[in-house]
Image (tube, rainbow, N blue to C red; front, side, top):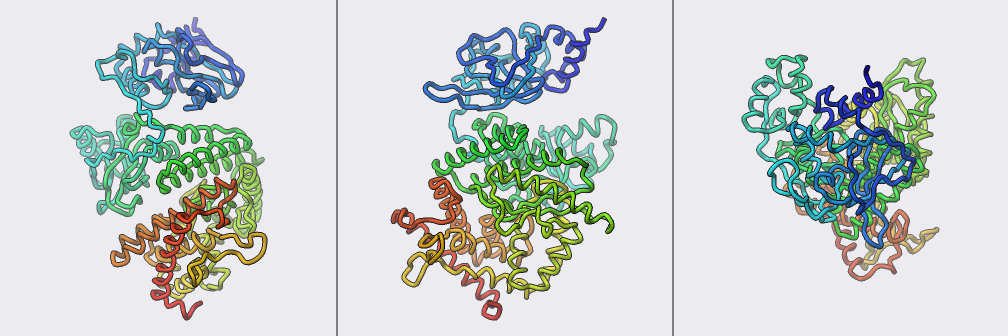
Amino acid sequence: MTNSIAARIADFLENYPPFSLLEKSELLQISESITVFYFEAGKMIFKKDEQVHDQFYIVQKGAVDLQKVEESKEPETIDKCDEGDIFGLRPLFAKENYQINAITDEESVIYGIPLNLFKPYAINNPEVGDFLMESFASNTRNPYSEKHRGRLFTDEEDIQLNKDPLFELQPIPIVKKMVTVSRNTSIQKAATLMSERRVGSVIVVQDKKPVGIVTDVDFRELVATGILPITSNISEVMNSPVICYSKNLTIAQAQLTMMKHKINHICITKDGTPNTKVKGIVSEHDIIVSQGNNPAVLMKAINRANSTKKLKKIRTKIMLLLDGYIKSNIPVSHISTIIFELNDATIKRTIFRCIDKMEEPLPCSFSWMSLGSQGRKEQLLLTDQDNALVFENVEENKLQEVRAYFLKLARKVTKRLNIIGYQFCPAEMMARNEKYCLSLSEWKNQFSDWVTTSGNDEILLCQIFFDYDISYGESRLTNELSDHVYDILKGNRNFLNRLAAQALRNPSPLGFFRQFLVEHDGEKKDLFDIKKRGIMPLTDAARLLILEHRVKNISNTAERFEKLAQLEPNNKEIYQACAYSSKALIKFRTKQGLKNKDNGRFINLEDLGKEDKIKLKRCFKSIKEIQELIKIRFETTYYS
């Protein structure tokens, strides 16, 4: 008679490695000896220096925190185990006491698996052994031992753990000898090339630019199963679009990107977009020995958060991470990318939970757009939320009903983001405002009106919507909207000239005697507005000039200037100076915000030392130079 409990356990285990690598009969045999534990939140499963148990564990339901423990310090969570994650295995093989705590983060059901029963399968099954070796080599379930004691299953050299706390911000090693093929290459030929060169992926290119990627997983799922014949073109099996980064990709960025997009390969291109030549590739295997998992732990916690209260708590930890990066003088480009991904995950999780709480299902596809500093990947501190929503076109008689649904959803989302710490926009430029909750056709008409009318208000609105990032939903909608905007801008020199006039509305922030221009009245009297007088002039200039070149997919101010330096070699020096100044001013604002526990916008100059003032004045020199370039190029005398 079949043991129904063991059968249910086996059904669960077969979904997760390394158990998924075993035969069903083997799983059933293991499952019959498994112990089922129930733990309330906050219960210790094992603690540091405790003698190892005769079993290891897998999370069936709930979550378990793995904590690093140091004398006279609070335990620090270094990883979070979700459903299907195993833990407590390495000490059993290494024959050492536990080096970390394992404590439940919430009500959990845990399976205890006897080591003596499992170990023969690990030794005799090469795939299981390889999986465990990779697991041990990674930073996940890190026991913080100085080294492994003895061998695991092979004669491989002992794996040394990198203990540099900022290891995750180091550039990741890039494989430059990748395999590239054209769209019409056969699956069989591509697979042969991969086999000959012993690589796990092939990049599909057109004019040397990446248009798709195929991994050995795709071959296994779509070709080996018989869904597609090996004579088919590689384009039929490729994943597209390709996620791209520039060569300065860090370990943390790679980890977060792979988690976010559920991929295991990232393509490296010249400027970090699919618009330039392929330079290399990074795989999940390349980062499997990376340490420094704090951003990944936070990302995992965000994706598991089941309340706004938890997301707010995680946001506090993100600010601590930011503070540590700033104090360690990490490049702001790396910091911005990491914080952006964590912000983006927070927004996504909030929207997902709000959709789940709606009484009715989604009436149609939609996209949630983050605008302003978050859209430019420059929002480090908690500032106002700027967002908008676009939904697909529906029949005229259903338009208001559909809009009412999304307005209700947007009110839920913006309310929760406000609780987390993203203040409401004072100008109500949020998706909960019916002006910014429109169908695709309505958005197209709105942009056409803004561009053709070209009054000061319309120009200001256009500027904000040129800097966006899709945070949730159907990218097809935002891509179509972006294409429309660039179409109506084509050849519209009048609009660009008016945009140039707006870009000059905030002149250099230094007076005649090189004194800082401060606020003359109001609540902020005698304070210096670094956003209005420092950051915005550079942001506006970069946006204008990148639009003139009709370059898509780059919204970050520093990255725009770096791209402009490539497009206009004769102005390379000034553009590079502006890129540096943009990053320096954002970092300076962040430091002030962290110091004063605010958004860092208004600065008391009396608190600054001479060195800080000199650095700021050097940045402001770039503003003056780029504005002079704009005046000459766009003849703004006639439009100001």
